[in-house]
Image (cartoon, rainbow, N blue to C red; front, side, top):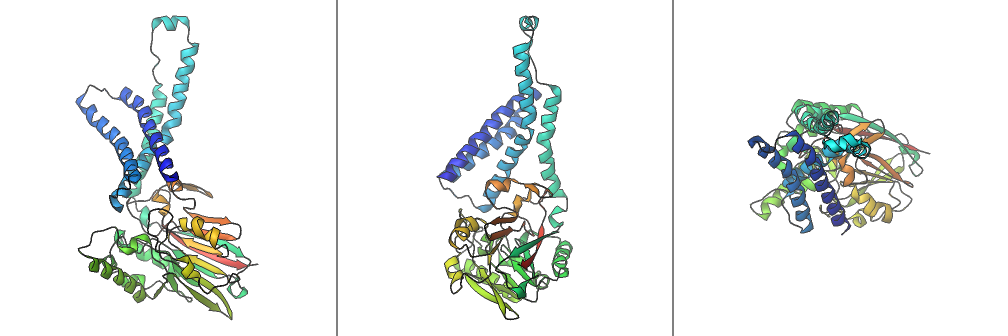
Length: 409
């Protein structure tokens, strides 16, 4: 019910913004022209999509993952473009209100209408158009292959001394079916290899839908190796549930082919299980769960099963694709899991990051949507994704290779 109320409030606010901004639009275009009808149709189309999206969610009507992704991008893009330009309009309306109350009697008698400031109207138009231009640039640029290495040093009390200084590499959300620049992808994988990590973790969404997307990528992905192994988990897209299959066997075969492919790469796919990593007589435990989400994504993950046989004293790293798992179960029921690694959000592939400041519409859906978060003695790192999906570009939130250096106190 809380989600429904939030979406209702968001929809109401979005429609209110659309109505408010229409006052600008009707002053810019002549409503009696033939061309203006097309502009108005395009304008109110966003409002229509916003309302339809709420109704689909409220009545639990499924339209498939990809249409839902397109709806989401349209709604969020429209909302934030208007939100960015809103201050200019509010300033102008405040100016008009002040002029209305303090204008001279002569002005009142003249009946002259106080129009919007041309400067502020142009400024608002530019502010609205800038995000639109940014999204367009994100598509036509090569930002989706502009891989960035992000480094963090993490200190843990429970980390065994033999693991002091261990270098972890995390990659996530490759979405191999979206990638068409083989040379650029090889460059990104070379960046991983050149870091010489001790261990590599992949946190899900290898494909968009089908294992056939991996054709011709096997030799390239097999290059991802580390002395302590490559350990992976499944993401929501790896189950093949966002596409149509002729029968259940075809879907099952697709899934089995995906599992077999990871084994052929030399990756250790973990499905609700744990594994010990031993160095010089010390050990840490890696837990890997299938996809689990607090929202409407799959809940195949079983953390109870993955935790089985472990003790509270052991240092533990959890691999779980969706970061909502951390708030929903990890911090409340498993507060001895030291480090959680997730992906899934892609940072919505749109936002602003300057130093430690970062903002993205992804924050509306996820409390932890990119980078490092800590609560008491627990940490979660959310990778921004190696590939892309839905929106065929990236603005501000660039593809990521994570390097974590662990230190013991």
